[in-house]
Length: 298
Image 1 (spheres, rainbow, N blue to C red):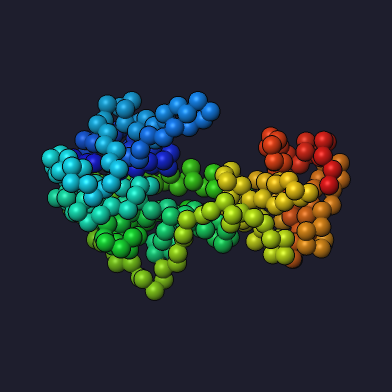
Image 2: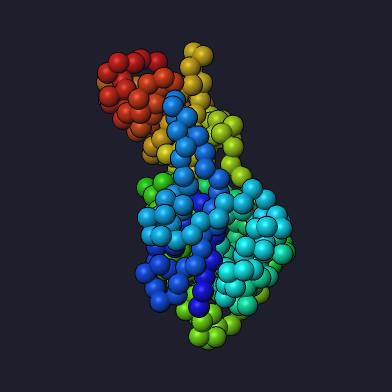
């Protein structure tokens, strides 16, 4: 079964890797554009393109997915299946080309958290479980019938970085399992219940600003959702301070009140307080609270 893989970031690489190690040939990869990064403005490839080049897989990088030349290129490859992991929204002209259709891997238990940032929203909302879903592509985003779902616990110390990696590898297993199901024809699609759907819109840096009037658990979950990037933050004496790791404390302090010892740092919230475990002052390195307090005082 000939597969075209479409994806861009690190999250997609384990899925591409597991397919290249399977019996199903990946005949091409479609990914995002190269970008100039750093002071020297060196051209950087997407993680998916890096992997594809190292494994001698042809790469396509269309500016527009509705471009006639791109569509013609996909048709000329005669794929049996398109697999999409962390890519752009595919137009119908593309996802209907393969004889066996196209499916997408989504980092939530659909229909919960339809949208661009399911992992962050699960953390912000303090969910105790999440997972991955593979579903058949349809016109409306994240609404297609489901092939399979895999579930996992969200640990108390999980943040965006750890949960991203966990779901990336779990997602790779789901992708290969789905491909094998489609190849064998032994599957039953499950319709999503639209009334149970919840949104997961794109996260912006501004959303990471901490409101100390909120309960401690809500601030703790915001920090988890924004760590390691872009970082939850607050402003103090015209300086931005990012927080990367916290714990909910029983200490009672007024909202925004800062209390510190030689090696511990607490900030009051609307309910309870949080202990700051890891932070970064603007223009400085990220460090734990004890190291920070050796050179800084509030």
